[in-house]
Length: 278
Ligand code: FE2
Image (cartoon, rainbow, N blue to C red):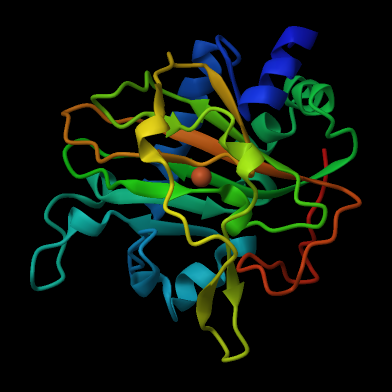
């Protein structure tokens, strides 16, 4: 599935693009399933997902989504009175964070042999799937995700996790593709996002106050079906989608089976649904 040269590239750059990883039909099946889930979703509870700290704080719906299938709206989906500007189908930012355990269509894809093989190739022999997200990056209103490391949010010891980012549609600069700093994973962890002692509160703990050298970001434009592997320490981001085209993606995060997963990470599981491997 991936060559030793590609594994080496992952090690030195902190990311790897695997073109043509998923079949067209596999991408379409995930898209159709996500659309179906959104159709069934009754937005009684609304959570706006943004990486800006304030809107996440004390957001119970977000904080309890680690072992559920929850729906989060684009920040720009609302008018001043709090009602949606457009139908819910065009307003959802993402679905998270346990699709891979709770939805049969996403579970089948997430635990497929080819994903297992890629994970093994980059050193995740025995691993646990901790998080899944379906990201819509809606036309015209798709929000930005500021520069970050995934290990800030999914911290383990040792600090080695991998994000798998599947392009379910072509991702271009125009519709808000990923951008990454090649080799940036070697600069260490900048911060952690911690559950503080005050119940339900989150706070960043900083280890390195330097801003990201965002002039070093390169766009990762990929075709539908591509997989991008992202080292948890790799700084990456995406810009707003102001184009008329959506940019759907599905993401998974893997940790080593033997790694310790601290109780002050935001994403937690109830004892009835522990993290599982493949
Ligand atoms: Fe990320």
